[in-house]
Image (cartoon, rainbow, N blue to C red):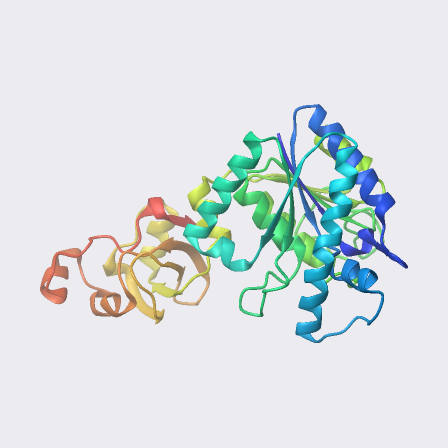
Length: 351
């Protein structure tokens, strides 16, 4: 089984910098799972805090260039701690730094998957973090909860464990939600002192992963044995049951790609798509944005509600010309024999 465990700054960082003893406990638990035949990847935070501690000066700041510099310094120190901890168990590690573009760009996404295949063959544990030294607003993932979910999908993971400092998702009455239900009213627990996410970002991440067939939990990371217990099937924290498993390509289209525009469809086309049919020009009522052949677009109904996503066979300019027309009219309108399908069902995820 493939297991992804995400550990945030609030667990990794103490009053005097990185909690090396905690990382050692985590690595011991990972080594135990590996000895049982599981593959493990760790999504880690803590680079900025490690940078502050290592430099021995400065303070937390919102200035982007200072954050990036601290992360550049601290990432080295963070990896040293992981490497030293895993050395006790004869386990080798690899550093992987990612941005949003790694997932949304199809070529880079496939390169990532190939790299992970190679690391698996070498029996190496990937240690993953956002590449904060180059991430800007346009390509940042925002928090490592989102990164963990996206990585789980890209790696075809079986389990995602989102460690936090509480026992799981707490409802408005203060009770632990053992099985997540979107109808449950939640208690607002805010964000951690070091982290960028909160409990809601973890819920969104767990839902994203579960919709692609990954069994996820939000649980207390102060007890690292929760990792093994969850993989063994014990009820730990708040569990998000998998909702079927999407094929890799459709999972990428649905949750990892970055749509370049929108296609509006009529009611008949919406019903046809939900019945498993491809999108034809006659069902298109409008186009929003500028996109090319092969780009991913959102497909929305006339009310603007999401119907699905797909890889489009037409540029936005050509699609505007043929919107609402029958496939038999395409050559006359475009001057060439166009594809009879705007988005093929094999290249589409329906919401």
